[in-house]
Image (cartoon, rainbow, N blue to C red; front, side, top):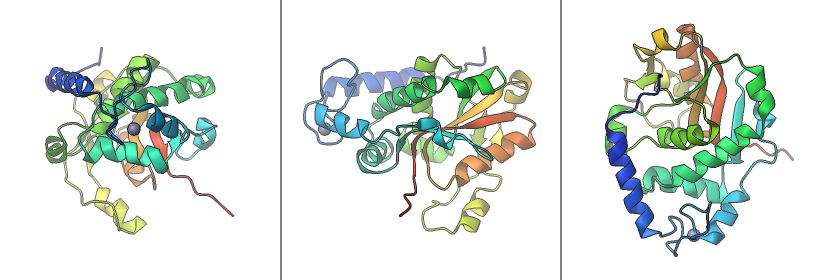
Length: 238
Ligand SMILES: [Zn+2]
């Protein structure tokens, strides 16, 4: 119910299977580890990646916009996300989605604090960008997350307006750039009127993208519990 998958899913899965056969670490091109649970990285890279995890993933789960993040944006995690987004390595999403699900399952108080049913909505890419990349990384991460967490994946948002890259814009320009970028999928409101949405994105930095999506959902009277992100930029003081 509500778990609608596009026809391209099978193609994407074939594509993933093909990449797995190559079994080359996407970060260093050495042979990937064959150990169970290592997915696609070599042992060294996976060890380094795991060091990027936040020891308290629920630390940022607080108003006005609660965020649950698996890791700190930087180092090997940053490189892994770049491989996923810019170097055509969609298999990276599987491990990152699973890590994020583990952070979620390790924080049961969050789920208890939200009104069921909970649904996971990935932040969409504009159709042109998705065509160019071949996939939406947030959606691939969401699939792995949902497999592990057993929460339903729902495509509730569309991104109709192409937006400029956010890089180099001031906070005001970022928000303006994203204004009306998202809209709620026509069937979504009818089917999931009472659900609590967990928005899922790969990275949470300034939060502008997430806030823009939250705003659209809330304007449509859809309840948003918070944001799930693989990586969060963390400010270190002192
Ligand atoms: Zn490696």
